[in-house]
Length: 113
Image (cartoon, rainbow, N blue to C red; front, side):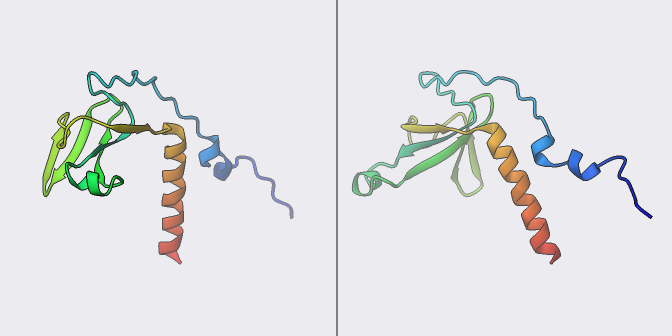
């Protein structure tokens, strides 16, 4: 007896076939300190003078609001702890979403086996 597949659920639910509709991001505006979907960095006083690769990192939401983890149990919103942003990298939302989904699938497989 040969079985024919009528509906391929596995094929419909793969990450590659899911179409995400994202609304457009606002423009990056350093004067207003708005960096949508960015990882931001600023140097630390004195420490960054000695080791230029050391600094303070924050993340930004889709509306450009800075979220800064500046201490134990302290989260600043729209107030970067060590001054203004010196560098930023805007993340690709479609690529990041696919990577997170694949990472979760890999982790689930590692836990199961």
